[in-house]
Length: 111
Image (cartoon, rainbow, N blue to C red; front, side, top):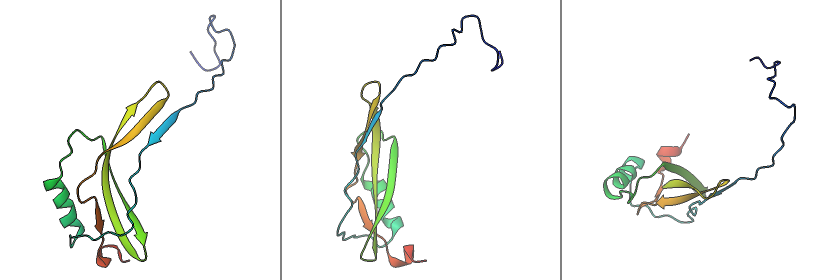
């Protein structure tokens, strides 16, 4: 049936509903001062992969960075999202590696 055609059951009434949704998202704390023991980004990531296995399955991993006084810090965490009721979800941080933060060497972010 095309858009301009109506069935006999169509009453022509319009139903308007107001729906409120709420998405609660946990965010990690951005670091202030980080002293990284890794020389490269690759070394940091390999350390996480080899030494920090999540205790449960993680749906999404996030990587972010912060800048403070010309220094860049990268950090990684994992989250899972759960429905809590019909119109509410919550995203919880469920994986934070031991070495969650890493300073980037200037050669890794310069230019």
